[in-house]
Amino acid sequence: MITKIKETTRAQESTNAIERLYITMRHLLNRGFYKPSGVSGNALKNALLVLRPEIYGSIAEEKGELNGLIYVLERLPEGIEQCRFINLTSDEGFSKSHLKPIIPPKRRRNCYRIDEEQMNIEITRGRSDIYDILTHLTFLFIESNKICDRVLIEEDQTTVRDWDKLVEFIHRKRKSEAEREVALIHLANILGRTFEEVVEIHEKLGNGEQPDRFLEIMYWLGKLALEEETTGNKRTITFSPLLRERLGHHIHGERWANAIKEKLWELNLLERPIHIISANMHSVMNTLFASTALKHEFPNQKKLDIYQALSLPENNALQKKVQQMARKNGMVHIEDKSGTNIGVQLFDTAKFNDTACCYSFKEEKSEAEKPVIFVMDYAFGEQAYETIDELLKPYYIENRKTYLDVCSISIMGKAGILDGEKGDLMIPSAHIFEGTADNYPFKNELSAKHFEGYGLQVFEGTMVTVLGTSLQNKDILKFFHESTWNVIGLEMEGVHYQKAIQSASKIRKSIRKDVKTRYAYYASDNPLETGSTLASGGLGTQGVKPTYLITDKFLEQIFNS
Image (cartoon, rainbow, N blue to C red; front, top):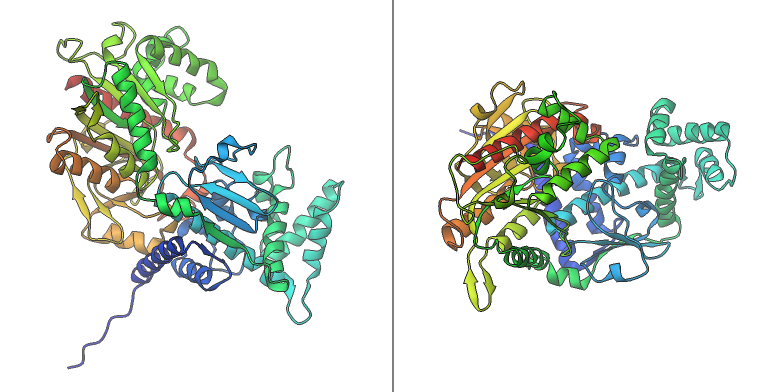
């Protein structure tokens, strides 16, 4: 009997493509450089084209991808499309030079334009940051090559009329609205998109200082690809020797953790009970003090109305008023100088005025028993392991080993949901690591019943920690969703947090064995729904309700413990 071999499914092909991407990226990091148009660069491009991530839309088609382009540009430094040389570095002292850092709107990383041709990007958040950058750069190179393929006439090495007219417009000093529209018509033809689509993206990317930013980006992407084909001037990505040497050694995480422990010692808080919360830098502070601080501005309104008002940029004065009350009641902000880009707030509950805080302890506590609430900003991917692993280690001071009395660790995050809508909640019972057999079941102090009656859908089950949110496609996600793993969503840090917590509590025994853990996520997107991926835009005020609901449950359990 001949057994028929099953054909490879799209989910399996996609999984293999992700594995190839990461193996290639690690190889390139060890090697120290690569050229996007070379063998290694083509390996990355081919793997990404096989994968066809949802977030990158029509990347595998001949037409240009526009929403994916905006997503990528928000996460890369402005002007990177003009640079032939991109150098990924460690923190090597560029901040002390005359160069001004360029910080992408949606990624906290310092980038420096060294000259007309070179951009340096500082990597201080581990391998996840490198994977993120290389994936986005590969997308840009694919789009760049699409432009080149459409405008270059290989027989005589000339370019089509549409491209010539775009170049002519870019080099004009004075540009009329009519000329701009004509340039957009030519660009639409180059990209294989409608004029209407191109105008929409042009308006999204343009601003007062750079009204023609979209046209200029497309010009530079095409220009560098054309020069590679016609002159042999290749674009190059390099990894600095110091970056390759330091990566994986927790240098920034150790600096970050030691600075925090030093501050705790200075404030005489090092031996007090500590509750760690990983969240944003406003929700815990607002939940603790906003209702009291703004009782005159919002005398009869619900807490949610106050939080929504605080989330609006025009209400900055209200936010400052809450900050003032928090500082008067023992809040200390620790500015990050380690390079992790993770800020920290300490709330000494022993200094809370009886009428200032919106919560009270279930039982009477002495000052020594009153906990410190430690809030850290979001980590990024593997950085979660680096920072928490270092934080939970004992602190050596005056030749004495001091262990932190960590009572609980609460993690809030945004995640992709597989069965629900933006703003819905996910309560995990385990994390599994994509591409490996690693799985981390744990006892979550939160459950779906804690969130009943608030008008949001709540899902309980397994969360997948992915290597990069931009590398997921529907085939893989459908497999996760329909398999016996009972996967409800995907995020980037869960496994890394839990690995650090388990090693500290069960192996190193540097924190109590019964440390309580809380994980709760709210949906930033649904990658299984067309038009609901991260590339379709942010949550806006939709994220206010789940953020503060989760924060409230964290604080409720901390004050009742």
